Image (cartoon, rainbow, N blue to C red; front, side):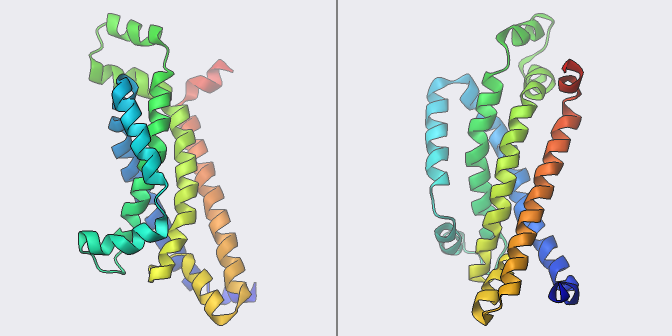
Length: 212
């Protein structure tokens, strides 16, 4: 604990960087996954293609993608984009299935009722279908958030900041305290992110509590 108190400034900076590198891909991935998930829920051929592609994308080793990406898009090796883009790809890969399944699970009677009272497709999606799909979408986001928080640390292997710096420095110096602090900090951040998403999901779906 003495080391922790002596390095609070360092830990605060690493926490901010880690949150940024994990949060941006989560938000961008959600924005990209919503239309793809909607398309997958409306068309069987599109669903087969999108789910297959997303499954393949998620199998790409994260370190290989982070290392190769600068040569593909022309960024500098220490550019944070080299971590953000791969994590965005993984987030989309995780969320497309969740969103497609969530939209497919919306009762057809509810969709038909909304159509009957004059809801156009876009308004019906925004006001009826997607709100009912929120619990499943939040569940997918929770998985993606924890995954991102874990994977951000890999960026330290090419010099990108975050809690991974504690692991690389600890291994190089043979100092286990840094490694333990990095593990604990990552776990705590994942728990906080999961709890916040769970709270957001409950706030967005008050009817679920009313039903119970």
